[in-house]
Length: 164
Image (cartoon, rainbow, N blue to C red; front, top):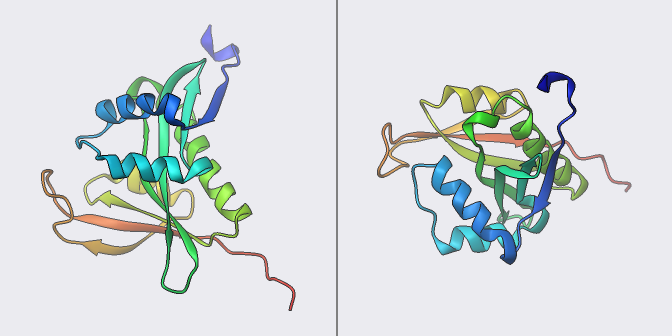
């Protein structure tokens, strides 16, 4: 019986040598083809982009981009987070998102955000469980999918007060 067996979920950084695994996952998970800039940003984010393995099988990923705001602060943009359908509900997406939240906190990054299609209630509810909130609605954000509108969903991370 599988319920009694401990199955390990591990995370691994995305590098040149395993970038094809991220590309393959994205082709199955998302209705869009991602360009070279997406993959360059994912590689440049280092530990903010991870592949998730369930019993050594690559089943999910989170890909982020680090952005510099006008005030010089860094924020994290989650470009994609996905888990293959048969492996959903096992805590893999939670592990991936918690990794990025924890790493952001350690790196003193105070903001994480992403775009979510307005009809994707599962995703909206998932992110809300982690303290994300809808901060903006963008009309006609998506070109080839319906509905074309998205929400900007943001989590602000409270940073410990620094000594003065």
